[in-house]
Amino acid sequence: MVIGGSSGLGRALAERLARAGHSLVLVSSDLRDTQALAADLALRWGVQAVPMALDLAQSPLPLAALDAALAAMPPLTGLLLAAGMNREGDEPGQAPASFAALTCANYTNLCHLVDHFLPRLRREPRSWIVGFGSVAATRGRTRNAAYSAAKRALQSYFESLRHFLAGSGVKVQFYVLGYLDTNLAFGQRTLLPRASPQRLADAVYRRKDSDFGVSYYPRFWYPVCALLRQLPWTVFRRLSF
Ligand SMILES: NC(=O)c1ccc[n+]([C@@H]2O[C@H](COP(=O)([O-])OP(=O)(O)OC[C@H]3O[C@@H](n4cnc5c(N)ncnc54)[C@H](OP(=O)(O)O)[C@@H]3O)[C@@H](O)[C@H]2O)c1
Image (cartoon, rainbow, N blue to C red; front, side, top):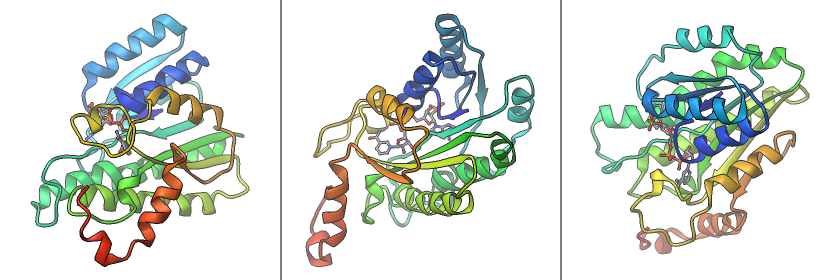
């Protein structure tokens, strides 16, 4: 199941998984995108691909339709949480509805999805849960305030999840991502190059059985983020990025 499977990284993951012969459930808020992609993947790779609409910004999340879709499919062995939502004006002082939507779509509802599907994933001898964070969460800035806080919280939840599932057949992985060449970063001025979502999807698939916990992608972000974390406040507060 690819959450956020209609564009960017999620779409690239769906392509990669279909190419490897996996049945798929593709979830996004706009059914038209996942419908077209699912039909295309089914045709090209001969896999079962089911499009589903779900707005992650709403609460509580209605999950009955996803359960019904899964009932007609092979057992669930992977949950890839590639959805991400940011918006202009995500700064301290924003309206509660905007804050709630960003928190639900980037954190709470992703955790609810994990919790909901955990019993199924644990029943399988080998399964896989992947979360995606952002280097934007390394230090809190004026911009992307709720998005970054949600991503940092998601990373902490994934560490708890990995701890909880240690020694089980469920691999828990979390990628901290730098800029990607996708809609989410469209029009943004980026200090460092953007990574290809297809190459990232290949790397994610290649490492699916590895118990690494957290990984930065591209890897040069690891030392960059380590440096950012060490910057004294007097320097950090002057940076505008
Ligand atoms: N792009 C970057 O530079 C960057 C940097 C760091 C981290 N990331 C993270 O990398 C992951 C992939 O991002 P991306 O660049 O591939 O983004 P993207 O191209 O904008 O795709 C985002 C996906 O999430 C879905 N989505 C967004 N809001 C949703 C909602 N409310 N309900 C249901 N689905 C929703 C979108 O579907 P709909 O359009 O149908 O809503 C789409 O499938 C995200 O977790 C993102 O936070 C991205």
